[in-house]
Image (cartoon, rainbow, N blue to C red; front, side):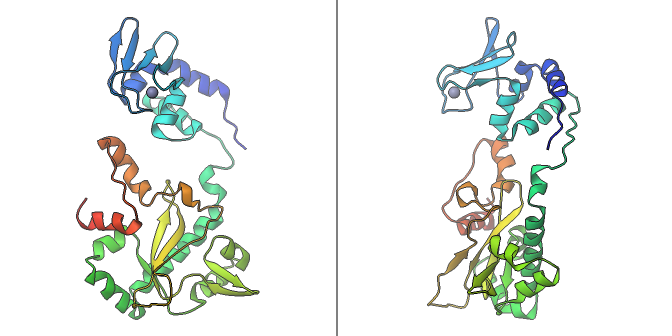
Length: 274
Ligand SMILES: [Zn+2]
């Protein structure tokens, strides 16, 4: 439950000037008593957005987007409302303290903790004797040490329960492990979802590990080359764009983003220094 005071939000709203806040993202030019700019919410080529200092609102006459300083920042930065309030506050030199008992990022604290443990385990496996063949496979394909680190590449062992054993020893129950897709339940028996595969962590937009993609590397013919985590409460395929958490700030700054089809394509681009 959040205890954010409306008074605080109103105080920030009255201190924030919509012209300077929007102007910190997009160039504005004065037209009469209002300002105009190219609308960032549709493919705009002429300034369609009008910003009113008097009413402290903006409105796009082409796509219809309208709102106040907080909705602008929320939409532009693609962040929740309260994050937008905090951004506006800091742009005005104010502090916005949120006293919440549960931040969104802590809702799935246990699930993220398990994913991080799995990730550390996979990464470590690649560095052991058991990882030599996988490491050679990666290096043959031009995936060097820097890329392995950058993308957190790891290895699931030649075993059906090494991760299961590690995580249950740490006190996590099988049901939670099945729910987040690290373990399979086959008729009441539990097995690691990934084994004998090179692992690639998948992150959400905030950089939390929410799943894995894993590929074979020994030329196996009778199994699918890639295996992905199934959807779970933390992993929504339709909402997950590989490496977006790393790319989003640069993309905003440079106003461009390169979209590729598969996550390996994204890694390839990084190998090429892009
Ligand atoms: Zn528009």
